[in-house]
Length: 167
Image (spheres, rainbow, N blue to C red):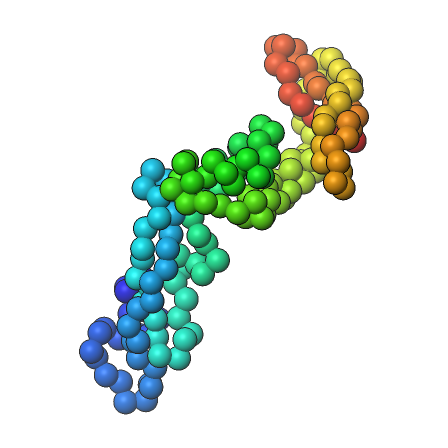
């Protein structure tokens, strides 16, 4: 991060420039959560004008991406946001609020939409199965059964692939 600040300012530490008044201005501490280590205190360098922002550790990022992926996987398997919040202290050494878990799950929407809108024109299909499945989902403030139509294709080699899900 110090190298990033050096590049941002265009000069090395203690090197002065006549026409620029922006200088290094110490560091500030923030906490970052690493998998298998828990919270780590990091000293982030700053400039006097407050214009520098490191790309290594963005301001909104609180934990590494592998933790986010693990939370998404647990969320997808049906663990509730409250349960994930309660067990996060044991898992990563830091309690994650239910809202943070929920926001992490919202990051899946883009991936799901790109999967739903993918090009299927090149898919070779021998058989097409359509079936319905009921999933329990939170709707409003209660859990309801939601019927979902599933389309599965089978290739000539016998490989199965879910083509679509529609509620």
